[in-house]
Length: 291
Ligand code: G1P
Image 1 (cartoon, rainbow, N blue to C red):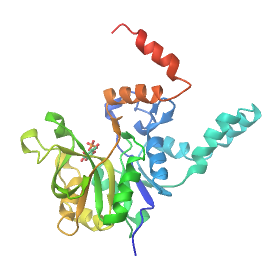
Image 2 (cartoon, rainbow, N blue to C red):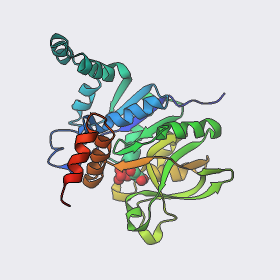
Image 3 (cartoon, rainbow, N blue to C red):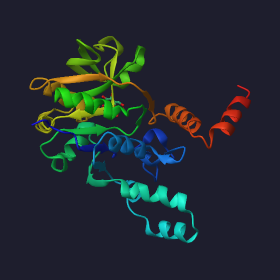
Image 4 (cartoon, protein in one colour):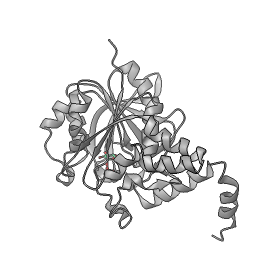
């Protein structure tokens, strides 16, 4: 029987040092782009792609994420009393939206380790991993595009994007051959985490969207620590290649690296311009800037 992707894992235990001091007492996943926390963009994408179970891998200091997806009685009561029905709807939508389960990663030991923490909650079925820092503006949503591919291949699949020059060293990089008849799909033959430019096997970078078969858990268990002394998901996927096929998927859409200050600012500007209630004035303001 064909396997269906129902569960989406969000590693969210990282320290967010790139955004200090903003992230000293607040998770980076809760930084807002316009008026929505970064992680909510990813959760909405997973829901729009048909996942109905969200698993968030958290760590110390991340309770704001749990509160965000929970019911806030005080806030709802206040909005009700003040007859702020529009805001009430928005606030209720978040807690009504999903079934969220949390698992704690006690030490930040890498992305592979974070994914391994979700093992029991995922069980023996394929699942998605979304890195909330990568905010992808796409229609259909990036994960939906990938699930459509998965439904045909029933194999693990990772989102990729062309990255030229030294910037490639910030990513996992795949070596792959195009699949005939599908100009977005590649069959992966190797991959390496954050290679130097000269050692990068291609210019196809791994972006923070994955669909993985549950075999990855056994493999992660046996994967030695890699770059930065961390358990790297890329290393485990490379080992998985010995047992199963993995595809790379060049998604259609626009990605913002919201984990980076410049990427975060660009995302803020672009998402603000997409909001009808903000667009006219914000646009005029941007045009008026003497740059
Ligand atoms: C992680 C992965 C890397 C991937 C990147 C995408 O790195 O380890 O393979 O290319 O996400 O955003 P990080 O950015 O967490 O260092």
